Image (cartoon, rainbow, N blue to C red; front, side, top):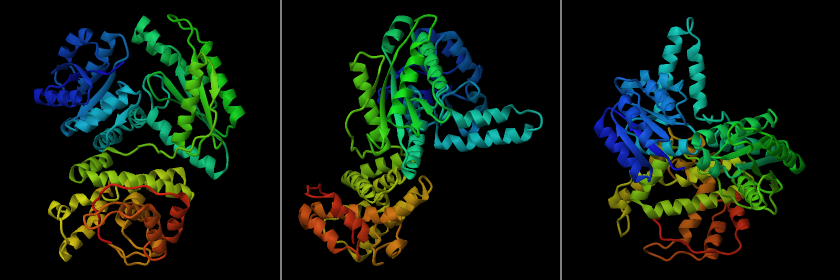
Length: 525
């Protein structure tokens, strides 16, 4: 079922802006009102699935509005709280209502992201909302610590809201991916198997259509409870979508994973629900290292097995067949990173396209060099961001058709510094360091800091080779791009001077034949 949004905001202009942003994102707005009383008046007719409530609403308070809407509608209604900094003291009460997402008012990208996260069964605590909200909770906690311990539970609730599915109590989609990275890293370090089970309730749409979404929610809660009761304490059951569940099963080989999946299937099949009777679930199983080398490939494998289970008649478990060699990594970038890439795309769209190719090649190099799954993801983000500092270079220089002056060249050479300054507070330190270092040369003659050898961050050394290789293959105003073989030869000739020999050797190993590239902006060596 698609999301249906009811906006409750006393500011008519803000309501209009929010509605416009949601509509532009193909999200249906079924009502826009200025008070909790008005929201109750139209709720039965509008039938919203998500209420976007401004915590500064007057009259009926925001938390009361949320509770009364749920009581009136009689089915699951998710709540997104939006706050202005002048009303941060009112947000705390929303935590106890089971509010799924907290965002700062006027941040339209965060608004759309929150709706999509909540629609998929996840929660969201936006970057800008987290600090003032946590500070307000801490202030209250310190003031009443001796007399009132309830705020301690409130803090715990706030910390949990972004990783816990409000309906089932299982962990959510975002937590699943974060934990999968950690468990896969541990499995690789100690050479141990790791299983992933993907599960989907059979014919769940028919339940919703026949009995309504409130009964569907009862089914989801019951299935979540059955899954939780049938796994070990070390296992990680999550709800990752509407009727979709995923389980991370550490220290478990193929036989053990199939037995674990069957325990889940049987536990669900034995449920006796008041309205629908019984339900069934189909499951797909994949195990590292037998079926995939990284998290996304492992999930893809388990999803394929789930598809096979559905087509085998449902209510069964299937193990994936064959190997998967995908190296695609999850796109887990924060809103600040995504915004920087979007801004770069407006200024230099071809540069964004090349950055994506550089990121893909950097991950291949990292795999060849044996980097961990965690490091591969961080390397990918650093490579995507490596040229974001171009936002600080004047367009007159970027678009200049002829040779650059010495001063213009120096302005371009500052783009790694600009990039580092832009991302240093939004990403991990090793990512920001790589952005600054991607034009350093192995012999110490690069820029901006003249680092040499191992003093250059590893991610920067890898990105430098990938970036140079893509630039060599790409057409420039003064010359056509090199052939694939010629670009490989040029990387090899620069090994030990321009490029890290280990990274250059890894490039030679992973390529056997070449392909062309697109025209890009080229930076001074």
